[in-house]
Image (cartoon, rainbow, N blue to C red):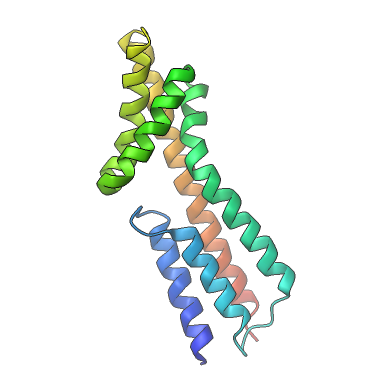
Length: 156
């Protein structure tokens, strides 16, 4: 087994873990594993696959920040709730996993209530940000798993 293949396996596994744990950039790490696999003598992969996985990684990385705000809006949040969700996410990044989960939720609720919304609808908007967070996490896990599966199918 060559060093590129070992590195690919390690990066994809760490990326899969990192797609759930916010301390690690899961998708970029898993993509690094795909790139490493590309250079392995035991993997036969077209260069176009690197491009597709890279674009998917970039798209899902951006969506990971957008989806909680989308969830806030879908659950009845206003522009203030979306702004609060985004600010809560950015502030939450400094507090690890609890901050990333609770930040958008608390930010959406706080900004909705500052805008005059009653607590019930504000809580519903905050719940939407949590649903968005869960959706983003599931998408990252699926993508990292698919990268691992793809590299496995390219093994010769």
